[in-house]
Length: 486
Image (tube, rainbow, N blue to C red; front, top):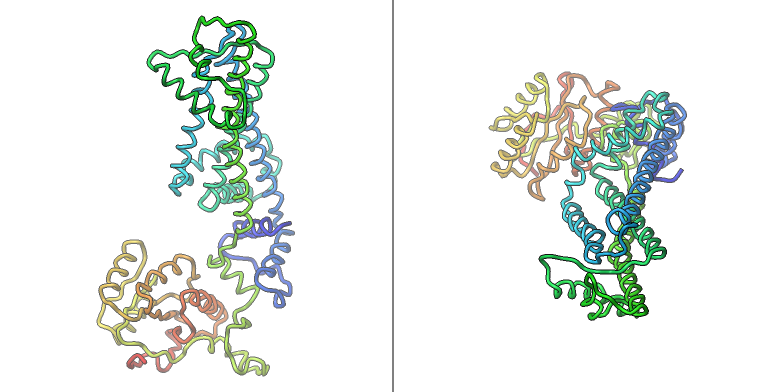
């Protein structure tokens, strides 16, 4: 199993376990780095969850669906020649119509694709994803062996196709499919046209009511520019002028003209239509491979924060400084959680306090603390409106420090991390983290969650010296001291 498949399987297990990773898969992870530890844990969890068979089935389903549509477009392209261009009752090909039929729609679709592709959100619209999922669901009924057995099939189905067609890979994946299907259509048309021209004798004409001969002459000259450089026999300007209904040419001359027009039509179809699609298809195929190679797990997600604490407890992490860590003292072991944050944190002046999703009890605790130090109303950020209000008030205050009050029992997640980064509205703003709870830190659950907060706080440059814990039953002795910021 390659790295991408392993990480995809890890994500699949995350979907199965939802927000809380299981601690049943015990092994010695202490000697492994985090990446290897996650990989080993994934292998152990796979023995229980059997998610890889579902993911393989979904990959096969996607490949089968795309291949089925390729065959469909190949047939449509092949039949379009006999349907719209050449049939048994006609021995003439309107060259102007042939170009419009195959090349013009291709160029138009390429322009539309360029516009859509560079508007990043368009190819990830929910309705487009839902349409694709509906189509794949219909195809999946032909291959439903796994779906009738695996209890988490629906969840894995939604995750997998959100991964392939969502924000991360959606634009590249949909572009690849689009160019692949167009290549199939044009390949079918090219092969069918070559077969028709090899087995039928046809004459090339041009017919138009509103366009002049000069227009057709210029169009033909543009198309013949490249084949002329390659010394390919193509129509001359005089041939273009004589390409009209009822024109009679000597037998030998007529045959040479037919060949020149055939060369131009096939060359145009291959070089101006099929070749660009194949090149784009290969480019996006390589982009898909690169996307897979660069696929990373979002370790700031609440699930992985908890999982990292299971695999590598933060008390053993190398970034924690403890002079007595290696002495094996029992008292040090019992109090190691207490050494990971500042128990005597002093409150800075010129700071602005913000509460984040506190319940009523913790909000009252935070309000009392703020009233002792600052003369501002504490805003409790609960939704987008309160978030914007807090950020606006923060910028108006021009504070040099921001104090974030959070509930230690809450699992830190990407939402908190994103908001904390927004609070650093200036490069020199220092964030402080005050963790609130109604229990002492020596309770096992509180200590474990405290480790999660210390780890995610480091992502916004909040070191342990700017973190403290406010338990209603155990308040650090100097936390209410107001001193000048050093």
